[in-house]
Every structure is written in C-alpha cells, then in structure tokens.
Image 1 (cartoon, rainbow, N blue to C red):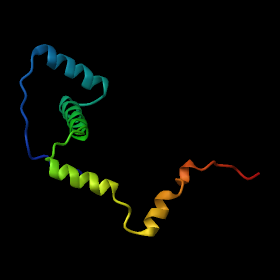
Image 2: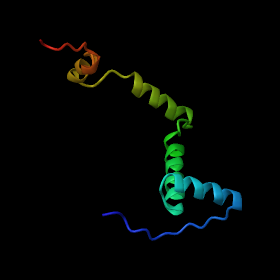
Image 3: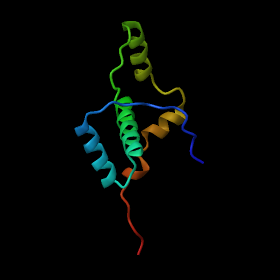
Length: 95
C-alpha cells in the first residue's frame, strides 16, 4: 500500500515552463503532478548520491588513512579478500 501523501509543495512557473512540463507529462502518459514529483525526486536522489567530497580535519583524516592501511584483523578475512572474485573466474559450460 503506497504511503499517504500529506505534504504539499507549491511552485510558480512561467507559461512556457508549464507548457513544457505538461507536454512531457502527456508524453509519459502521466499526470503533471506525478511527472513533476517523479522528476524532482529522481534529481534529488542523484544530487544526494553524488556527494563524493567530504572535509575532515587532519587528525580525523590520519585516523581514516590508518584504518585503510591496517591489515585485516582476522586471518580468515584476509584469505577471503586474497581469493579471486567468483565472477572473475572463467566460465565454461559442460557438454
């Protein structure tokens, strides 16, 4: 069951912007509201997922680098990481 929509967002647009949005919504066989909301959420998710730059102080950065450079704590985990990935192995079909 879809979540109940209880919040509202109002937008002011030019006539041209509205026309473009309506034509695009019709092309997608969608309502204007569904098209605008879907497009906005998709773009918002891309923006949030694309955050690749994080700033930290030098002490935190040093701890982070140390953690990356540290050997795995368990021998079994090191063995697992040393093995070739399952999907990297050649695949052969038996006749």
